Length: 282
Ligand code: AMP
Ligand code: MN
Ligand code: MN
Ligand code: MN
Image (cartoon, rainbow, N blue to C red; front, top):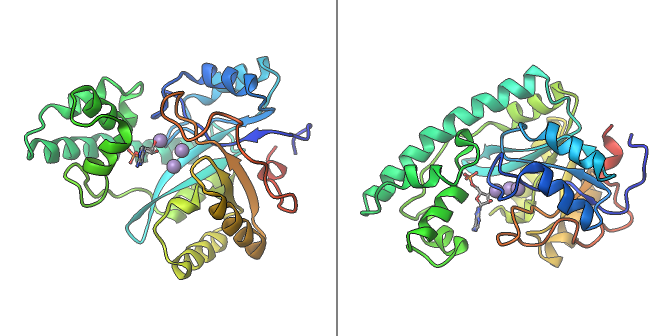
């Protein structure tokens, strides 16, 4: 349990350790300046920013919780799992994430080959320049480079025209299984939470099957308030959280000042009857 009762917790954001635009300590200071009092950094598939983030959080007077956003696949669809409150040097999570990162460089080369086939050349090397962490090369880095060379006017248009399923720069990839990702988090003493469920293309029935499986594997929460959720998404996933007795999370998914849905901490509160996930973490 935390020793404080947060009034503005933000448990989802990124730094240059994955596809964010700011270093971890700058993200921490920005969160604090925005009134966040309990904070987690959740870089994709890498926890290399947590030590600096934790120090900066404490200097800024915020409670800090270890975090990560793990890329998994479920029925061939990419899904994101958040982990909170784990021991960051536990071999289960350290080695699990290391294995997951290995696949990213190989995928990036295949994406670059796919773009070369439509006469856009050198994108792997170009995207790499945008990756603060070369092992964490992401579609976001590809998008920034493709904007630089004038392929599209902004990052969302690159995703729309080049980097989503069915588009020329998108390639299939084997991410972690849900069972593996939850194991890494649980072995390391953390709790697992489904990230931004409103973003997945699932029927109501599929979402229930997905959440059943997640619960059976020991999953404990869903992100209800997210920078990428509509007001309807919030109501819908609040209902599902109640139905499954899940804890609820709240996160901006901040990536950088120019590239985000909302700024750190600038989100509606959780519906009052829901159990906030910070109650589950130390
Ligand atoms: P990756 O993990 O390499 O597949 O990249 C996924 C990342 O790309 C997400 O975490 C977002 O930061 C970004 N992203 C995904 N879809 C979009 C989109 N439609 N518009 C802008 N950014 C996106
Ligand atoms: Mn991202
Ligand atoms: Mn995500
Ligand atoms: Mn995210």
